[in-house]
Length: 204
Image 1 (cartoon, rainbow, N blue to C red):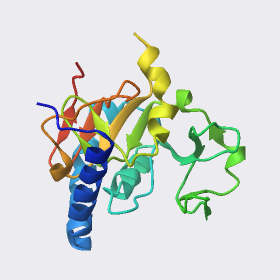
Image 2: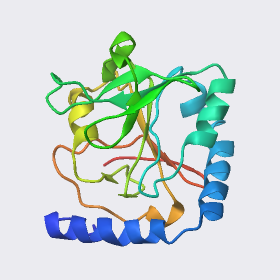
Image 3: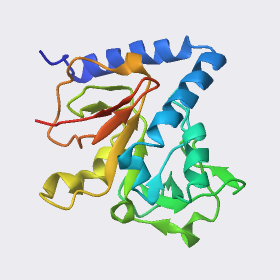
Image 4: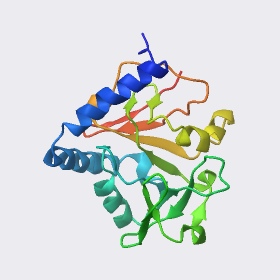
């Protein structure tokens, strides 16, 4: 049976998992991030992608940085999400390399400075490393509730063939649930990487 995910249920689930994440030590978080990076960087979904969006971890999220270091070493072009005034609450993405200056946006999230010189639309990406609160093996994702990823990649739900970019969730193993209920606007994940393995999802 799907886990109940009405508004109240989703908020309770977010609080529960955020508490679990905050209970982890820095050593535990670092070890999980390194384990994830080792097997995720070899997965065909990642290895065969060139233009890859990432994120900078906050609020105890799985840290993608060890994976990003491996991707730069493989010659991948990486991007971070940015907010632009005309975006209608949708994300754009700006190229990012180590050492680039970051600034804080109005949500308190770091993004590349002078990003307008190198920004691209979501449709130009091959792969999106996606933060999440919970997931199931059907590719259903529970985010933080802002809806930015679902709005930004909602166009994928209207496509039958060309499905890029693919969304790859990054999470701790304890964030996996048996089944999440979904909403019509939810954009499914192609796969989820944890410290244990990469799960390739099969949406119903």
